[in-house]
Amino acid sequence: MRRGIRGALATALVAGLALAATACGGGGGNGSSAGGELSGTVTFWDTSNDAEKATYRKLAEGFQKEHPKVHVKYVNVPFGDANAKFKNAAGGGAGAPDVMRTDVAWVADFASLGYLAPLDGTPALDKTADYLPQAVSSTRFNGKTYAAPQVIDTLALFYNKKLLKDAGVPVPRTFAELAAAAPKIKEKTGATALYLRGDDPYWFLPYLYGEGGDMVDAHSKSIKIDNAAGVRAFRTIKSLVDSKAAVTDASDGQENQLKALKDGTVAMAVDGPWDIEGARAGKAFQDKSNLGVAPVPGGSIAQGSPQGGWDLSVYAGSKNLPAAYAFVRYMSSAKVQQETTDKLSLLPTRTSVYQVPAAKRNEMVRFFKPAVDGAVQRPWIAQGNSLFEPVKVQMNKVLTGAATPEQAARATGDAYRKLLKDYK
Image 1 (cartoon, rainbow, N blue to C red):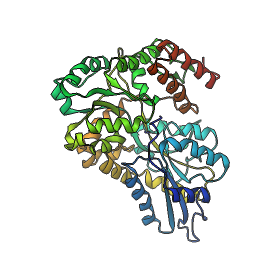
Image 2: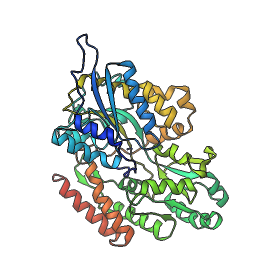
Image 3: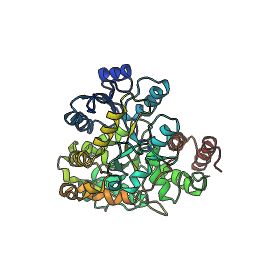
């Protein structure tokens, strides 16, 4: 994630499929034949990245083997476009998919607008006791369930084992340790210590959590980001870049970070399991065992990383709800989740998959499962996704010197109060 805002992936829409989806709207057909067999079309918008989409397409189309009278219309939608594209289609009453792979931060937002079908009591939800409790939390809004958990994730520190070994430095446990090690890494290997995602506010959260802060407290309905912890978090990212311990940019951070890691021009990057296979495709990781993962470095007070992931939601205006419900049930099943874990090292949301021998042997799953268990849950409120844009604006200002950390924290808090009228 997923996954909060993960950055706009530079993948193109499959033009013909996208046009077909827009033309047909949400599915088609009656949903079942006279004998009760599912039929018609299910349009599926998949938001997976370049390294994942071939697997997701194959899995989605596998649904047709179980239901030969159903046609799955698969459309890969770039993550950065998906939220606005779905809202435009759903709000306009035409072109929305029957099922969408929805970032966990979008579910409450879409549900609050009436765009999602409640799934309680439908065939979409199956063996719900098998889901990780923290994965279920993102699927609920105002007491109803609007999605099925499909993937859970969090951020970690990806590191080049050889570069750290050549520099003679250990994996940093804090950002202060990372900054202290940076000159030695540069001197011994020529690589910059860290690629810092300055373009995506989701990546700001470990710095904020590391200082004991948060964006908001949904229980007390209070703004938290403009306190001393928020100031320290903005100060940390500025210090890392100014000291040349980190490189950053204001755009295309997803692609640029991955390329820098793959090429070995940076020794470390904060990233998630969705980029494991992408990173391993680079020359720096021709020996796949050279890619290490460790907890995100801590700040001066704590260590924390946000909970992310992907859910499967059904468009409320779908013309083929029976097939859409069955498709969500299939795509969130333990069988399909096991395949995404085997092929992509993505973390399942079903506890039973973690007991499968292949999952137990998967190095990335073994690391990320404890990390997910300790991840910080974000506020699953309708405005949750909107909280990121003010952070993004202020990150850019701080990194370019247009605002001080104090000014950035205060401006973010002011923006939150405009978004959240009943918060103080």
